[in-house]
Length: 225
Image 1 (cartoon, rainbow, N blue to C red):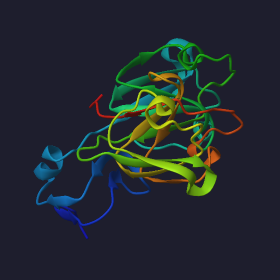
Image 2: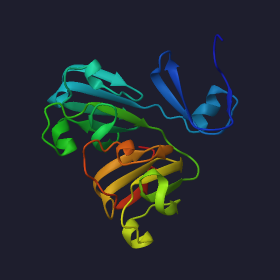
Image 3: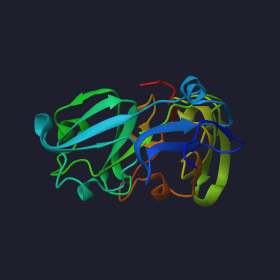
């Protein structure tokens, strides 16, 4: 094919990249018909971009990406500041989207250690682009690992899973639609976890790494950043 000017998404959610090997600007597509490039723009396209810098205050070597990056040290020896040109991203303290994580919107972050709220030498080691979602939100939370124990289904925000559902814990999750943030404490406070559509059979699947974390509240990611 010399070009791609239209497409029909029957099932699932897809990312289309400007360049081969999943590089360049990215477009998020949900099920629907896109008869032209203009349709892509009117149906949920959002170009995202984040620039990472080796040193604080946007100094030193830099690396720009519009998509997920599992290991930033492949491009930079360290990362101590970042600038979000457009869109929303999750940034992680460990490679492969693990460990302490934080949502960053369009703006400047001159000191990543202060951003992450932790004292770390490299601070950010991986990132994920958060696509804009238009449509329903739906997820199921389970009391125990491997989708066992008490189950409840969410379609909106929940400021306390303990109060609303009387759940003693949440150890596995199935996200059917939308993008979500899970918070350590009620009222959307404390450490957070970003979940996209998929099955998460344990807390480690959610990206906690060695962290010991409980889920207190859950919120949809609805803003366009």
